[in-house]
Structure formats: C-alpha cells, structure tokens
Length: 89
Image: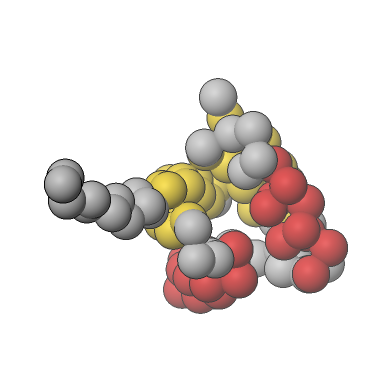
C-alpha cells in the first residue's frame, strides 16, 4: 500500500520526518506531493529527497527516492538479517 503526504511552506521539518517515518511502519511506499509554497525548483527537490532518505535510514532499513513531476516517491527496502550457520555435530 501507498501512504500520501503533502509538504507545504514549512518544508522538511523534524515533525514531518517523524510523521513519514511512522507511516513506514505499515507501508512500503510514501508519495509526498510538494505544494507550490514549498518549492518548484527541481534541484531543491532532489536535495530535500536525499536529506529525507538520510534522516529516515536506520540499521534495519534503507530508503530510496524517485522524483516524478512535483511528487517525491520514497520506497523502503528492508536489509536482510545476517544468517548464522550452525555446524552439526
């Protein structure tokens, strides 16, 4: 499933990042529509998406982004846990 958000003139705040992070508990994809008041510069959007992915990452998950028009699509990839091989006796 996909969860949708809108980013306005406040931009990329800690509260917004926590809201998006909590959405990834039940969803793998987040679509963030950037309103006219936030930015219309493609380079600025790219920097915001990279910063958001860095702030969302932890030791168990990795995030990637894609910009389509004025929408950021952020996907979550779970890193596989290392398996431990036990030798039989």
